Image 1 (cartoon, rainbow, N blue to C red):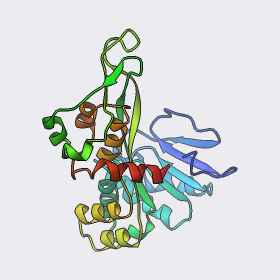
Image 2 (image 1 turned 90 degrees about the horizontal axis):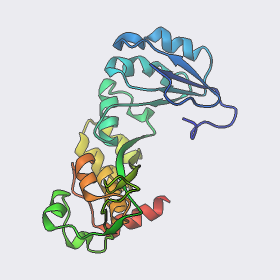
Image 3 (image 1 turned 180 degrees about the vertical axis):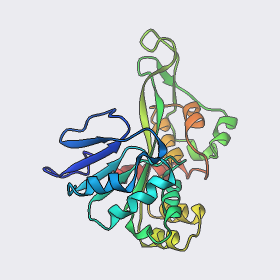
Image 4 (image 1 turned 30 degrees about the vertical axis):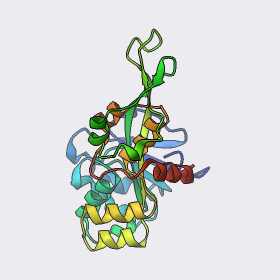
Amino acid sequence: VAAVSEPGARVIVLEERVDVPIPGASHVLLPAEPEGLRTDVVGGALRQLPDVLALGASRGDTALEALWCVRRSGPRLLVVVEADDAVSALERAVRVRRDTPHAFIGALAQRLVRRTCLDCARPFVPNAAQVRALGASVDAVASAGFRHGRGCSHCQETGYAGRIGLFELVVLDEDGDACLRRGEGLAAVRRSALRSGAMTLLEDGLVKAARGLTTIEELLRVAPRSVPPRPLTELERLAEQEC
């Protein structure tokens, strides 16, 4: 929310509880019941003329339906949606109202994985079964610098210390928008996103594992494997472009 809000912007956040206070934002607490987000609640927020309106959790399709009135009122809308990945989140939101795909800028998915302990990390060569489980080939990850933590006093013998994020950012272009409008399904929207330079959660994780930041085991535990990852050399190039 803070990243997309310009200095001096009026920001309103609707959520059940305030986990992380955002400086300068007005937090509106919602009832815990699924029907807690009603049109009158959204209307009350809109009467304050916000520049950014954020919903801390999607609270079901009813909540998404109630929020479509925001699209016609001007403020930028940020919504947390429970979904496997960014493409699934877009598809779910559009499923509620098929006439609104053009209202979306995009979606960002995230997963947390454990970070390899830097104090005890050692080079690691995965076996063929582990690589196949990722949907990759041994040749595709030949240039990787995988590392494993052996366990030490710093990480309490776990091999991990802290966490890092895996991210999948899908920014809708004309092709992706058209796929959503036509209801072509997740596969078509995902192909469009990948052609436009997006990386899946698994691919972002593979790049980070190849740099020794996390492990293959963490990727297998957390990252969706809906499509096989592209070769690591191509993913490294895409990652450099995003920086």
